[in-house]
Image (cartoon, rainbow, N blue to C red; front, side, top):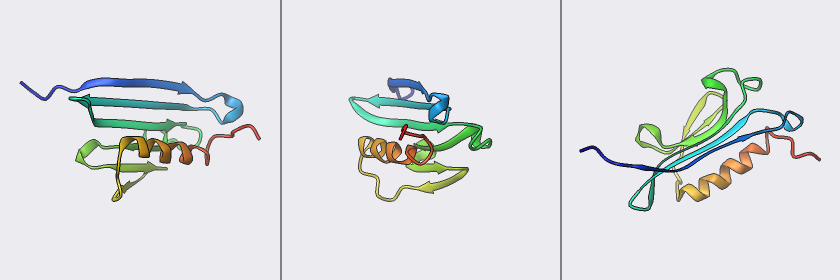
Length: 101
């Protein structure tokens, strides 16, 4: 039998138009209580029409941790944890999403 991962997070958040629009999504799979696969992305084709509209995001597809940023891919050499990457992602979002100030 193949490896069994359990999807533990599948969240979507619509960003209001007044804050820039788009969609934020998080997906996480675990095996034996450990995160083994993840994807988080801000999608807004009005900002970036390529890469399925992914403006910025992080995932570990293709067996390495990496960041997507406006069509470019950067390997993450200093990966410590999924939780720490979610904090990086939240900071990255501030560049694109108007916080209302």
